[in-house]
Amino acid sequence: MKIFLIGFMGSGKTHWGKLLAGKLSLDFFDLDTVITEKENKTISEIFSEFGEEYFRYKEKDLLEELVDGHESFVLSSGGGTPCFFNNIDFMKKSGRVVWLNTSVDTLKRRLLKERSSRPLIRNISEAELRAYIIRKLGERKMYYEQADVIVDEENTQLQALIELLLKDE
Ligand code: S3P
Image 1 (cartoon, rainbow, N blue to C red):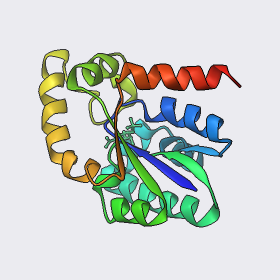
Image 2 (cartoon, helix red, strand yellow):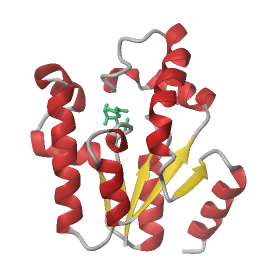
Image 3 (cartoon, helix red, strand yellow):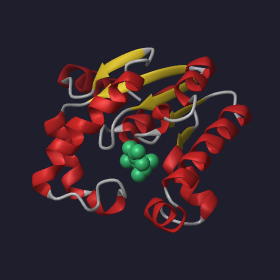
């Protein structure tokens, strides 16, 4: 079984991906981490030295490599992964795609603290961040909405249920 978590930057893909993989006893991959390990550079360095287009090709190639090389896993994609090339169709053909849908206010709160590590928002001021998220999310929604499952990431009942299940381990 291959599970792909998609969603905007700050939607909790890595957090929930690790929990889910642990619960299901599956391998966990974070696509950004796989890229940084392969390139031996941070995502910011890859963007600034080689540009976004290079990053998008790497992202696509490594996504395909992971899918071809493994039977099962939980994979947290990058926020842009489903929006480039045929990545969303490829993920849907290869397994189950889950969109973590998170509100703009929560995304803004989380991203404010982590702007420096994300090249797309590192130069965006606090005042502009909300408008940026709304615009970018608007552009990307048509890809995210193609997920097989859409989860309200801030649903506290869902979070409580997961925590309860994990406690029983
Ligand atoms: C990006 C999201 C980032 C990373 C890169 C580009 C995007 O991943 O892949 O900075 O286009 O939204 P996270 O969603 O894990 O922050």
